[in-house]
Length: 189
Image 1 (cartoon, rainbow, N blue to C red):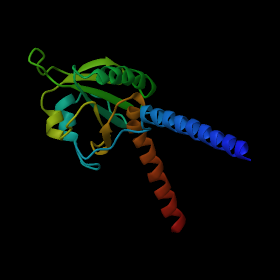
Image 2: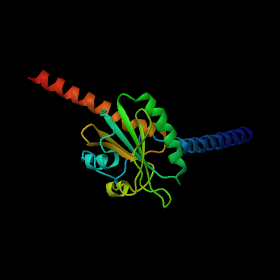
Image 3: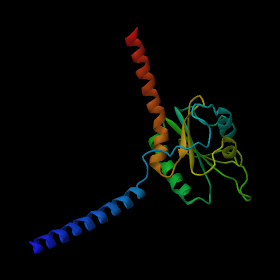
Image 4: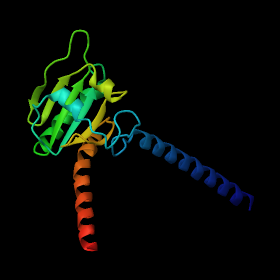
């Protein structure tokens, strides 16, 4: 009986140790997995706020009209911003008929405010020293999705291409919600 009790205790201790190691590894994995959408934050413009003035300051009238304009603020010293820029190039190819992506990088002493550059269809680059600060975007990379009328659809910290795409998807989601509201009000009448 004592041998049986001893073996059960050893077995239980072994199972507990293995369970602890598995849960610890799961915790590491969950910390490394990025969130599915842009991390919302209180900084930056409010959702629903019209920022067409700032968009016009950045682009003039050089952007073609599209459903959504994604403004992504970055900086040369930011290593994540380089990855975001590559991701923006991929997204510009996929969303070229529906969205404009505007990369706005901070000015440095050597690089002053510069005119808007078209990198490829749907992707633009601009250096600006003031707009990010005026909009209250406290950190980079920071993305703001704006609809055709200059109204903020969404905003947040964008650390990967999935975060950028989640902001672009807001216009599609908003369009579906509007269609559902119209269909719902038609059914009530």
